Length: 131
Picture 1 (tube, rainbow, N blue to C red):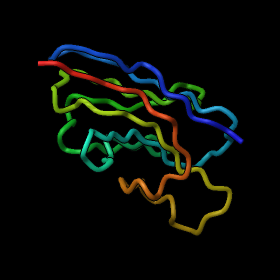
Picture 2 (cartoon, rainbow, N blue to C red):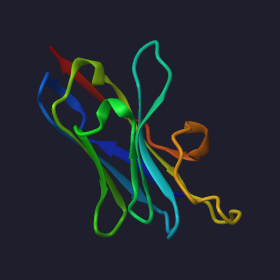
Picture 3 (cartoon, rainbow, N blue to C red):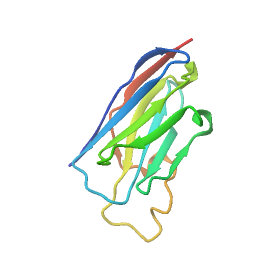
Picture 4 (spheres, rainbow, N blue to C red):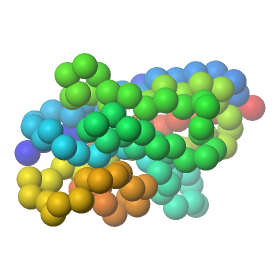
């Protein structure tokens, strides 16, 4: 059984930057979706960014131009570079993966932002942005 372990969270002032990392160990899938999600107190979990195994990415509108999702060369580490951070970015950030041994044709056509799609989750790392 594999696991996802996040790191890199912390406290920064508005306008600052952080780089989150997610180490994916114990998985060997060539086709998949991975993503970063966040949840602030009293709010629902929301998709921040996703990346397909083919390299295509999606972002929620509020982070476009500020955040970048990427993978390491060995594709066993997921990153989220966060620049120009705002207080409203404060949340628990979690790494998630949609890894499946069996799937129907077209299932991985694109990566959606529905958290229910993702079947593996890390425990999360806290990001706090002060004004």
